[in-house]
Length: 116
Length: 107
Figure 1 (tube, rainbow over the protein chains, first blue to last red):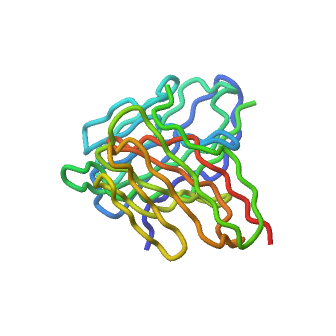
Figure 2 (spheres, rainbow over the protein chains, first blue to last red; figure 1 turned 60 degrees about the horizontal axis):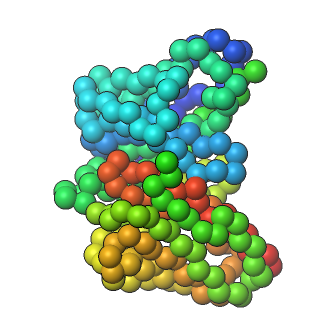
């Protein structure tokens, strides 16, 4: 019953520190995504992956890196944390709907990151 | 560049009122999804619309996809406090969202 699992749920970083947000899904989905959500706003796509070994930039990729070595895992790395990266980060996964592109996205519970 | 424009950005109404929120783009969608997000949680899918002119109903929620597949609307009849949340539209592929409409239904 796990679905999409994100860790950690909360983290405080100092400017310039690095960290990795972990994301794992157990639904055998090909597509995985990382979004960020600033207070009171919608979701902005950071990076996405259509399968193991394939990643692509989204709307706001600067300051982040990802990898997809397995179908299940899609970690997001922040190399030099900046206050502008303070946000809630959501990982999601989906199957495909053929020519319609992605199917329903299933989201994790989010990771709240504060950079001071 | 915001590919999807959602309006209104905020909406506060009394229980029992009807409302409509909109999602517009200058380009054609292959498909469009509507999600609702409650505080502290991830978004949850409400519906996917695919065909121009399509209308889908989910209890008191009615979703319409424009004939030209460039716009969509969500109509809620007799809103209830449980409808409170952030309503997001997203277009494929990959799924990119609008800024959302934040709805508050007051009892």
